[in-house]
Every structure is written in C-alpha cells, then in structure tokens.
Image (tube, rainbow, N blue to C red):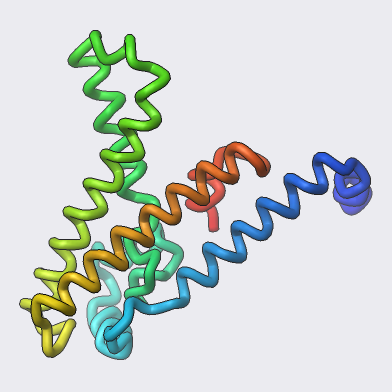
Length: 177
C-alpha cells in the first residue's frame, strides 16, 4: 500500500490533485472549528451532553462535529444533499426539467443555498427561543443566518472545487471528512 502511495506521488498530475484535495480537507476541518461570532459554545456542549441520545447527535455526525460547537460549517453539506434529492424527484414529476440537465447543477446549488438560508433562520429562531443563544436579538440573528448560510455555501464551493481540481466527488469527500 505504501508503494502505491509513493507511486501516486511520483505522477505530477496525480500528486497535484491529491495535495489539492488534502488542502481542501484541511480547510474544511479548520472551518469546522471556528464558531459563529458572538456564540458561547459552552451552552451547546452542555446541551449536547444532556441530550446524548437525541437526533441532534446524528446531525452533528453529518456535520463532522461542527454542529456541537456551532461553527461556521454547522449546517454541513446536508442542504446540498437535500436539494439534490428534491431536484431529482422534480425531474421525475416534471419531465420537462430533464431538458435542463446542464442547468440542473446550477439549480441544485441555488436550491441548496435557499435551503441553508431557511435552515439557518430556523436554527437561529429555535435556539434563540430555547435559551441556547442567550441575549438573542435581530442583529445576532442576522449574523447567525449569514454565517451559517455562508458556511454552507463555502462547503458547496469547496465540494465543486474538489470535483474539478481534486480527486473524487467533492461532496462525498466533504461528507467523509
């Protein structure tokens, strides 16, 4: 196995793709550790410790643990996956959408951004009402929504970059991370 890895790094194009993919993985892991500005992450850590067997732990696993620390990438790549499923189902229901096969990726990306915007609003409102986000106000809510939506958009962008310049399906690589 080590010989295969060594051989892979001897091929310039493959080495470039591997290093690019590794760099993007590092960026994703760093972004998963940066909390949304103005958020006290100790509230979330205590809440997760109290609700150890809740469905939020599954969501946290999908986001690589970023949900627990309410990081920039707390939404993870799930809005993109949901958007992809919705668009695929719509092509079955509305056959005319299949004509736009080249535009479906673009539609999928923007649907994902819309879904992440809606999820960000729901999280800011829900966590604000439940007391997990103390001193919640409209400005703090806007910051949370912008950061979470932007973080999801960045993950989608990184996934597309990995697909174009790296190795493998970028969204799958991000999910694995």
